[in-house]
Length: 339
Image (cartoon, rainbow, N blue to C red; front, side, top):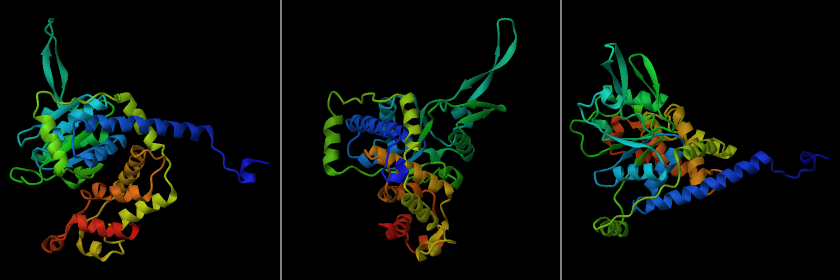
């Protein structure tokens, strides 16, 4: 009699190997969180959501006022995860060549002229684009290709970017003078929008003490770029139950006015989430489960990630804004039936 006929469950060698890989990855990620926590205080949710983004192989948009350690977080992630890290300060006069690189004409000793490509700062593994909404639309579109295709085009030639490649962009929610709002197509390329708030009282006290002395704590390397790439492959193999898949589909489709049974969505949403929101929720839920030391995601993971996945993939109409309705309230209403 076979195992199937006897009704006895069996674990295949492949499943056993995957479980072992997930458990091992969970321990490495726990150490990574501790290493980051020695430097970044009071932002555990931000740290976790940023790690989820990198584990899922995506890019993140960090929204917060200046002084909340966004730059420090990116620098720390580069050290802890063993990634080459570079920073771009976006300004209105920043040109695509300032990010991508350019070809220069050189003359050899034999007086032969040829073009040589000089790589820009985008040729790195972890790129911080500071105040991305200050860059012009032309520069934003150049970065869009890099984010989507992991390559850039210079003079008709493709140049692949290093692997892994991640963009962590920041944006100030208050200053709007001299800015260019990111187009919907580019916003959709960010896996998560992470809102960075102020630390609580105890954490801010810890920041005050830890950063004003003679010595500051330094993060320690925990992973390498090669290990991160392997981790991203492991995340994609994490099993997802049918109920979680259906919850993801329902959540996203309920955010579309033409399909939604929710009155607030039909009345207030002008730009609904597309299929990429489903993909983001699936990958991010897997990553969150592993980061939390679990072997598979649950509906709770989907609900926890609904806001960072959907808030930049949805827009309200004029009537909603006039009535004081916020996108957070709409997402809460979409999540309510599953909570």
